[in-house]
Length: 292
Image (cartoon, rainbow, N blue to C red; front, side, top):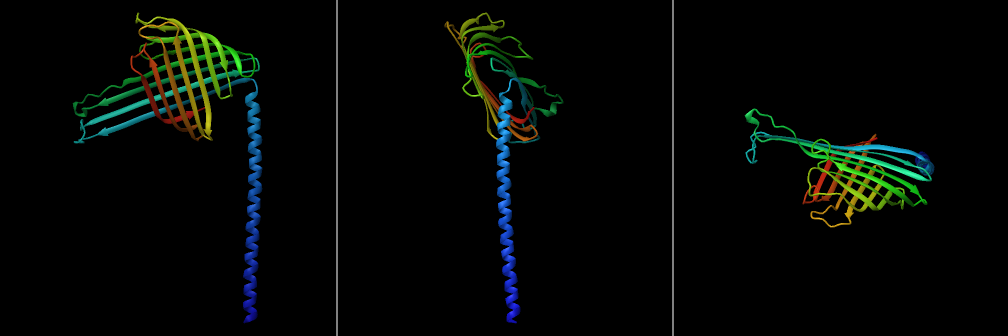
């Protein structure tokens, strides 16, 4: 009996030892593979950096679609017990940039549209119509001749208007020359002290003027899959007018890629321009996003 018990104990110890050895081997194998993957990722990142540094066109498209549907039927606590509402908001942005050792050409465009329908009496057999609540068209083109890797002389065209309603009423066109500073690849700072600010439209109280145009554009992948794009555009006139021709616009967009370019997007913007409104303006969109 003692001999049999000893054999059982020995068998258990050998089994435990073999399992421990196998576990250690698997852990070592896992660490080896992870190190190899890390090395490959570093090599891929290095190759990508080399590709990005090569001359050529870089293009892309991304946008956000937000929508909302709601229905209330005999909801007594509501101000309108029987109501239907729906809204659609969409933004589309695209860019095409060319870069080589001596010069660059950066082009971008953005479109932001929105509609809202609210029917507060569904029993009158009359369907409400969609009303437009957003209409923004923005185009920007920047050409620069490089003095060195950071500083360039540049010329800018910046156009901002509506496209479906009140086209060019007002519309704003900036044409100017100056300097562009690129401290890092993801940031572009434009300072044009010689800029002609043209106001288009029927309002005779607004005129065109010379001034300084400033644009700051920044794009950054915060974490893998999450990208932030920010753009600040401002104009400061040299002559004082009432109302003022000075203006600024700051837009921010966040896109989180979930699967093959499809994800969740957030975009918001702030604007101050007396040529359009005496009060500040703002918008925001949350919804599905797509990047190409």
